[in-house]
Structures are given as C-alpha cells and as structure tokens.
Image (tube, rainbow, N blue to C red; front, top):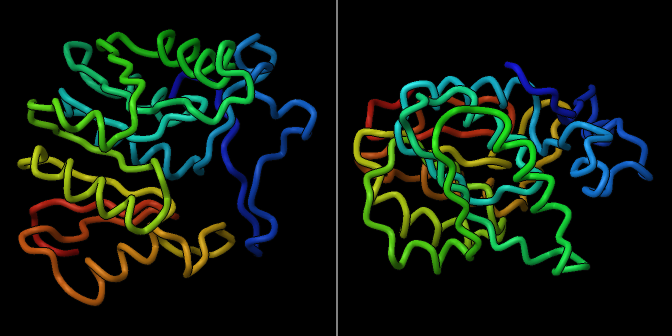
Amino acid sequence: MKSEINFVKVSSTASGAGSKIPRGMQHPIFAWMGMRAPLAQHTRAEHEALMKYAKNARTIVEIGVAEGASAVGLHEAMPPEGTLYLVDPFHLSRLPVLNFEKRAAKRVVNAAGRARTVWIEEFSQDAVKTWKDPIDFLLIDGDHQEKAVERDWREWSPFVGAGVVAFHDARLFPGGWPSPDYGPVRFIDRIFRRSSEPPWNIIEEVDSLVFVSRGPRK
C-alpha cells in the first residue's frame, strides 16, 4: 500500500466509527489541494481485501467513487496493462462547476497506479446501457437504497464471468457503521443469506464488505 489514506476508524461501539479528521478539514477541497489524504469510507482491512481481489483483475469497475480512496487501492494493485473504470455522476456537489470531490478523486487516483483509468460520469443505470466488456472485478458502492443495489447487481453482474463482485456497507460487524436497515445489508441478507442466487455464493466477508463469485460457498 503506497498512497496515504484516511481510513474509517472503528471502536468497540458503532458510535465510535468514523473519521478522525477535524470537521473543518473534511471538505474535499482540502484533498484536492493536497492538504490532506483522501477520506475513505472503508477500513484498512477492507482496503487490503479490495487490493487482494484487484491484483489479477485486468478489467475493474467501481460504482461509486467519492474522493477516490478505494479506487486508489484498486489502481495500485491491478496489473499495469489493465483498465479501471470508475462510474460516478458526481452529482452531489454544491458547486457543480468546481466539484471538488471529483477533482480530489482524479488527483489521487491518476497519481496512484499505472493501469489505464476511464472515468464514466454517469449514473450506473445509464452507464450499463452501452457496456459490452467482460468484468473481472466489480465493486458496488453507489446508491445504497436496496432497490438500487439490486438494480446494479442485476444489470452489471452478467458481465462478471469467472470474476468477483464486492458489495460495500453490506454487512454488520463489531464497531461498524452499517445497521440492519441499510440497503446493501438488506439485499445481501435477502439474496445470499436467506435464499440462494445460483450459481453465485459468498466467498469472503471483511468488515462491511461482502464478496461473491460463481464459486463454492465459504
């Protein structure tokens, strides 16, 4: 792990989960200016797990980029001849013309790895309409409504043949932030825990991340 990242900190209680960066420094303008490292929405353990699955993936798609912390890990770990596709409309900026979150993400991701990076500034349901390529690793971390998570799964997973799909904020864990009513948690419980989605099965779980593939259940 080369790049400096501000990971989510967890404690013995969920209320202790969060960033230790002062509130006044949390605006993405400070990441764009290089005054702080990007704010991750995941833990260090999750970051390392993402990098593990990115290591041999030539085509990676991440839905939901924010400041680019997870994309940095994917970009660093994946083969230099691969391509990282980052899907995010960056529509939540209060100043769309400036959009410091997008600027911050591009600054850190483009400096992180050698693989080609393609920025797709669209909602995932629009981006998939023209998608044609096989995907080795898919990270679903966009709209967290349960119906939106399921839509991303139904529309994008057919392109993942022998690869892996990861869902963020999809699992309860000690000291973590997800709650039972989180959309990704409800989706994973409904589709992969209480029923089955053959031939897909859960292969690993790390903090709030759940990884599935067409392999045997673990």
